[in-house]
Image 1 (cartoon, helix red, strand yellow):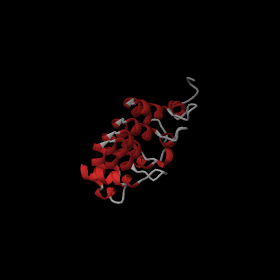
Image 2 (cartoon, helix red, strand yellow):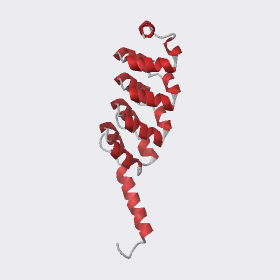
Image 3 (spheres, helix red, strand yellow):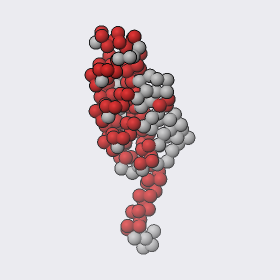
Image 4 (cartoon, helix red, strand yellow):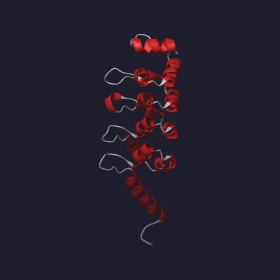
Length: 173
């Protein structure tokens, strides 16, 4: 290729090939970014974000989860921070059964992730899954007291009109 293309053309070609590779999906519909977020590889996530398209970051796997959602679900707080710094709007993307990353993190007991997501958008607390359950319901069901406290600190009215179990737990806290 020496002498046939300019350095700028060569750099553009390399960038195009790199972007194509980074944005590829496997048989499960997972991008490299998704896999790195799932496995907790922070430095890999940071490097891939440099070359990922917006569509790649938003891409959902066959399990209907994107990179932020899977990182939140796995409790990878630092990765959640990096992805939210990239685009704070990612926290509103819905996953399986209309679950937000907040709902998934709350259900699995990832307090730091819950706090991070709420710091970016406290209105996430109002979202419910298709079955009507919200982050509070799921945190209560799993016995995640710190998350229940954090959610109720953000919105004390959240316990109003909820199930008897939530009201009892709220008075116990």
